[in-house]
Length: 354
Image (cartoon, rainbow, N blue to C red; front, side):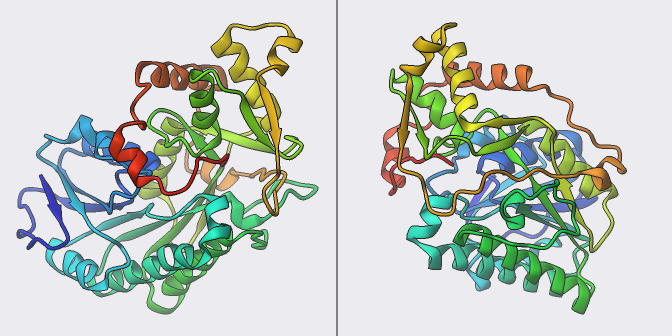
């Protein structure tokens, strides 16, 4: 079932033991979590909320669109009247808050919009959740709140030192969420994950961007030196991490969702070029690389320690070799997924490396 924010909500569907709200549900990670929830918990009512911005699509939710325990609602988390009515009418038990502006380059261009969505939108949700009595509010944050790499990996007690408007807005949203736990005992849990990749990801992020460029026989554009590195986590693994936190996480806690697998951006491009262009010689691979101007405040990396989450029984299971092959295969099979007319019209900014 599909609804939008100017429609009247029906009464909560009877026969379900819980109701789960997922914001940003038509985006990359949110859609994978929705599908997992719908399939794993058929006795739960899953409400998928998204305003359908340029980087989200209902196509991401096609596998569950006809399931009886799934409802899609189009709406904006920044609209307090809509959000308050949604919580007041649907008896929501669990919230996964994925909705956010996430693209770092755009955050330098439009910092106020990132504050509006990531900070103000989170506050609207938290306030509505406080008055409705939810059982769990899982706030999805990012490893970028830690700032640049230090001489050791970050654990959850490390201070926040964000270096760009995006990570500043996410750090502020975290603090707001945890303040609701301390002051109002709202059952908040915060997660911070490494870079996630896999099928359906929008083309502004680095892996699908490189894949898309190579599909068009264009060079991989690398910002700055390309020495910056990222830890890459396959989307199935991070989805399982969110379900683990929902089921076993301690209220008021922060959980890193990390992986030990790390690649420099230049090495990432080289591996994708070799796999997609069937090349082996370095000189041939170099012909597909193009170095461009760096973005402001480029962080070198965000290594995480995830012992707390390991203590709940979670470990990443999908190897890089398996995950990247699945990802490449999906983009080969769906070359026009993000290139249809409506997607191009929605994307107001040129694609840039994430």
